Length: 146
Image (spheres, rainbow, N blue to C red):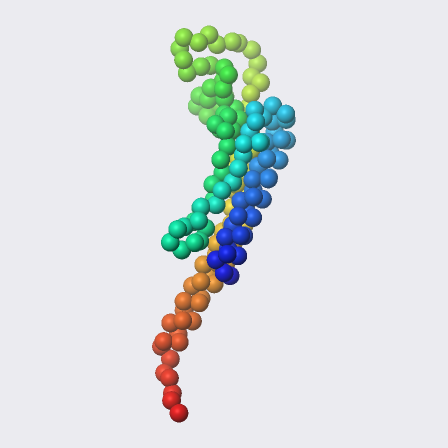
């Protein structure tokens, strides 16, 4: 596999995962996503020295972390669970039923899709490694003349 093909496959993987994350936001948060869907983006970092894809990143509003934890606007996380409260001791905390819950829109999808990226990387670097071995093999063979 050539470097350009590898980079294209990594870019396609990032775009595919981004689309799945957008779908998660829509199904888990309904229309109250706070612009999270529209601001979600993926980016592939290309190395300057070798031109190979080195990292895939996802950018989203800070609000996305609050959605994932189920916190904000009168809800905090204490001991791994969401409770009514505030980090500011001067804030009056309302009582009532819990209406916010963690929505795992990011981590589960990434964990499920990471194997696809590892296959792309394994294929690229496996091909590159095999080519290196073949190049060295040519140097090690006895050249017979005549």
